[in-house]
Length: 79
Image (tube, rainbow, N blue to C red):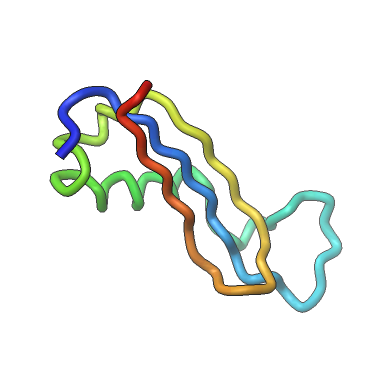
């Protein structure tokens, strides 16, 4: 378990709808990225780090995919 500061990069891949008419990569029904992030950070508490307050840096992305939906997670204690 990481005891010091942590960097967490997350990339959420959302299933592409049949039609896309927006300028943005994802729409209002795909999920708020901050809520998606909170779920991941909470799930990693007591597994990867003691508390999610240790996460001091990171990058968030959300995009459509034609492949398998999911999330890419990169964790580093080199911050």
